[in-house]
Image (cartoon, rainbow, N blue to C red):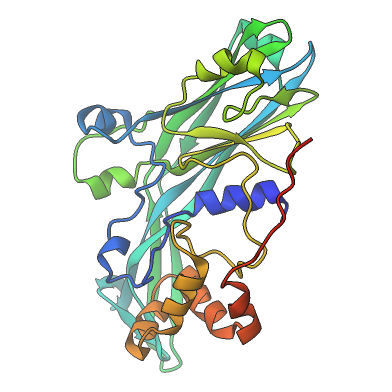
Length: 333
């Protein structure tokens, strides 16, 4: 996986699960707290729940240079379990078949809208709009035990609607300000926060690429562009340069503040979904879980089960690598 996609994926799933990775833990019952773009009517009546996020950044470009815009987010999926009874499915709080326990929970589907080759000169004249239109659906995964008992896992999601709009302004000769807005226009007729989250773009972020042009760092812009960089109005997201250090062709605009050229440490054995913690601390905490806690994790989200197996398989040498590493930092030329 390339550096850009690896970082973007870590952002997408940041906070998806938190230590202790058990569904019964309070923090894992109040999920989807990062990067949510909520239905407009809900956001307008519930402060702190944005319905729009905006990315603004500078790009040095010549006539004919283009940009690509990729916006990704998670869509909450309700997973229920049911037992087959008299030819009909009857919802149950849990289902066990052949020793495997199936429980209701919330999952997520990755969604993406993208457009490539947007001409900056054309964006000066008229914005480009990408519509978001996801229909409500339900999937059924049928289950049959060796003893003939039958049931199903039901996965369903609500409809989503909205749009991504990209536009450009010429600030100086050869310097453009690029604006990308993500707006959630999903109808909202009232209900709980949990109901609203089913209609929310969760963990929303964008990746911007330019063909021929070069993005300008907002953290450390050149002096002649500092005032323009400070004038960029970012709402609910923050763009940083990403890729190999010194490259300026790609921006990641995330709901968490990162430095330019963020990296995932090579010592990390995999995602723990909680970048505010230390890998070694989380790994040792996972290894200290009781048998009952491990059993609950295995009955829960497959991503949590993968964490459990990965931590258990680490060698003493791999664990020591998490303790600390000295690196040589070379300043950019």
